[in-house]
Amino acid sequence: MQLQLEELLFPVLEMRTNTNHDQKGDRAGTMLQYGQQLQRLDGEAVRYGLMVSVRNDDEKSRNAPYNFMVEAYGILLVTESTLDAEAEAAAVTANGLAIVMGAIRERLADLTSRAPWGRFLINAVNLPAPATISVI
Image 1 (tube, one colour):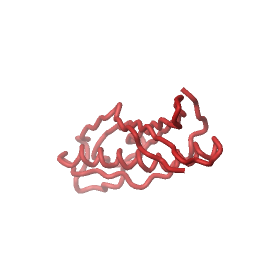
Image 2 (cartoon, one colour):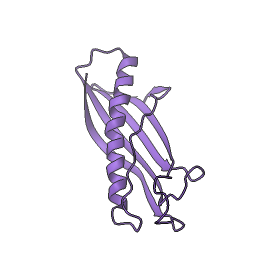
Image 3 (tube, helix red, strand yellow):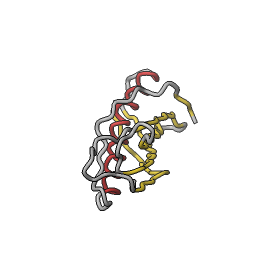
Image 4 (tube, helix red, strand yellow):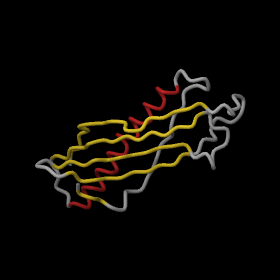
């Protein structure tokens, strides 16, 4: 199976500095919440829409420099697939998640690069495959 990112957009992109952040304190205290949804899109070609969201978890975080919410939506084209529908969806999720999370990571790093508390980077993420796949 080959996977190509056809489109990528950011329907939600929000970042605010946390005025209570202690510059001399622990910078690794930001805890994150993730969400994802995979949809197989109707059409002649095999395409999937993958929505991924990342936000800081205020309740679990300690000394977070920023409050943010980022949603990215990628349209992924599948070619040369010999997989059944379930295996194909799992492969799209695994590979597509790495692609879309990479884009989110870069966008957030860019947004915070000139912010007062410095650049913020998201670590590696290992999310389970979504439980449901819907066709739209």
